[in-house]
Length: 558
Image 1: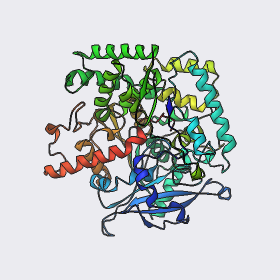
Image 2: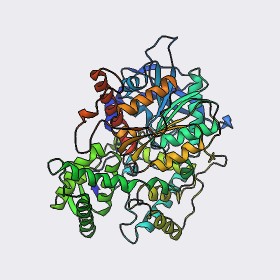
Image 3: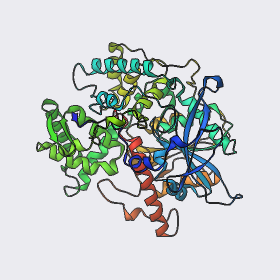
Image 4: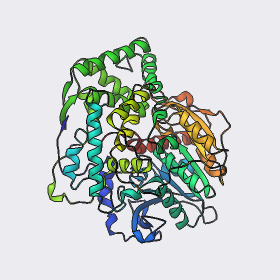
C-alpha cells in the first residue's frame, strides 16, 4: 500500500484541533500540581516524578497532567478520579479534552476528572521514539498496518526479522533512557504520586482496556491504597506479563458471529452484505476473502492509493469487531462494493490522514508516538521473549486453535517482543493479585469482546477476592462501544457510595446493531426524566467516541 508521505506527525482530529491552543513546553515542570488554564475549560500542569522510584538520582520525567475541575463545595469535594484510556501508549490528555463534562454527568461533578500522558507518551517528556525524524517513522510504518501472519509462507519470518530490527533501533536510539522506565509498575507508582499531590492517600481510578492492566497492577502493589478502582474491558494481567495473550481470543469469533447474525436480522435495507441466514453471510465473506487473497484489488481515493489485499481486508474486519455499533454498517457496504471490484470504501476504513512533507519543521517534538510507546511498555513489562522462528510458529499454530484472528492481537503482541532488548532488572511482573484490598474493585466485561473476553475478567476477579463483576450485553471492546444507562448507573453508584452490582448482573445496551438507538430500551433506570436519560446517552456516546481511537485498531503501526 502506498500513501502520500510528509514529515508532519499524524495527529488524531482532537489533537489537530487543540495542539496549537496550548504550549506544554512553556510550563515549567514542578514537584507539585501547579495548575494553569488550558484548552478553554481545563487546567494543566507538568508534574516531575522520578524515573526510578528506588533511585531518584537517575533523574526525572515530566508528566503532562490535565483535569476537568470539580464543581462542588469544599465539604462536598470528592477528590480526583484518574482516567486511563488504554493502549498502551494512549494519550490521556487527548482523550479527556472532549469528555470532561460527560464524565461529570456520569460519575458526579464533585470529582476532579484527571488524566495524563504516561511517561514516555504524548506531551510527557522525555518522549520514547525509535526514529530520528518524522519522515523516517513514516517510511518505516508504510503500510500502516501489520501483514497478517497467515498471509503467506514468509509472513512470519518477515515479521520476526522486522521485530528484531525494531528492537535494535529502540535500544540504540533510547538516548534519554526512558524506555526501561516506562513499565506498568512505574506508571502505577505515578498514579499514587498524582493522587498524593491532590492530598489523598487512596486512589480513585477508571481504566479501559490496557488501563485495566494498570489498575490491577496498582491494586497488587498498593492494596491498602484503594478508594475505588473500575476496570472496563479486562485484560488478564498474568497473560500480559507472560506475553501470551491467547486467552484474549476466546470470544473473537463470537464477536464476528454477531456481524453475521445481526446482518441477517437487519435485512437488505440496513445491511448491504445481506443474505437470508448467518451461515450464508459467513460463506459469502469467506468466498470474498479467498478471492482477494488470490487477486488484490487496487483502490484510489482523494487522499492516496493502495491495494486491498488479504492483510488489509482481514485487518479491517478485525478492527470492526472493536466498535460494531459504529462499524458494522460501513463494513457491510464496503464488503458489498469489494465484491463488485471497488475497494475504495474498504481501503478508506484503514487509510491514514495524508502525510505531507514539512521538512523545515522536521525537528519538532514528537507527540504521536503511540506505536513505539505501546511496544516499549508491553515488551518491557513481559518476561523476555526469545522465540526462534520455529518456536513462534508453534506458538501461533496453537493460538490459532482459539480463533481465526490470532494473527493480529495475539500474534502481533508476542511477535513485537521477540526482538526487544530494553529491560529493567527490578520490573514488577506479578503476581497480580491481593488477598485483601482496602476497597473492592469493580469489573465490567462484554458478552462478546474480541480482545478482552469475560474469561479474562473472571481470572482477574478471582485474584482480587470480593471484587464486583457485571456484564454488558453487547459485542465490541469495552463498555464504551455502546451506550447503556444500566452500565452508567452502576458506574455512578460505585463511585458515589461504593455499591457493587448483584452477582450475575447483565446490563442491556441502548443501541442496536445496524440500527439507531432503541427507544424501547430508554426506560427510567437512571432517572425519571427522559431528558436526563437522553443527556446520559449522549454523554456515553461522546466518551465512546473519544476512547475509540485508543482502543480500536491498536495494531496499526501508526
